[in-house]
Image 1 (tube, rainbow, N blue to C red):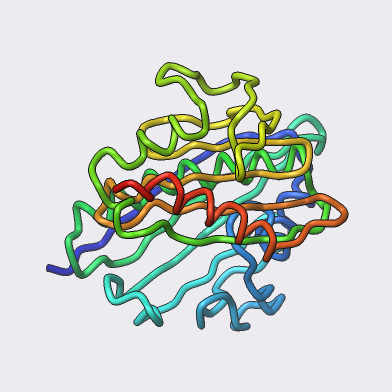
Image 2: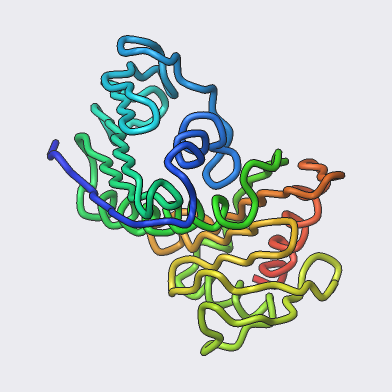
Length: 246
């Protein structure tokens, strides 16, 4: 049954409104995934065939699309950003609203979208504070079918060398591809997602097995010599190895 949804998040960040605006319009690869920048006008084209319905740099940006291409679970999707200065423009307040219509398995879709929103907005703040406006090499991929199991994300955390009680904000050495130890900050941790921050990257782990899909990884690599394909091959091999005995 079709049903409307609305997900609202508000936060402050140690970045100027102009830096936030640049991130949400041109720097999406730094925290989400790379997208074509929107046409800078009301009525212009936006991501995924959307139309820009509000454009007031650096304060308001809205895009809206009906009959979302490639997403059978939605018939309407709208993203709205409001940005206001704080501390004489040294910081910014952001209000993000994701709304639309889900047409299939509403409770599951809403739960997944809401929890992903928390992770993506956190990653936006990490990008703004630690890496913007450095260029990014981006890679994303899903795990094998075995990563859809109920305990799959627990296995991911343990394969990284994280104890079950390793808390958000902890500095650790994580086990990466080929057993390499990587100095990281666990910048996000809950039963559904893990975020690792290195000096040059944000590495994100998605426990999408909770919503009937494979575990996923995204790598936002800001190193001067970053190679998206090499990141993909390395971490995809790592993820397959986690479930090779399944």
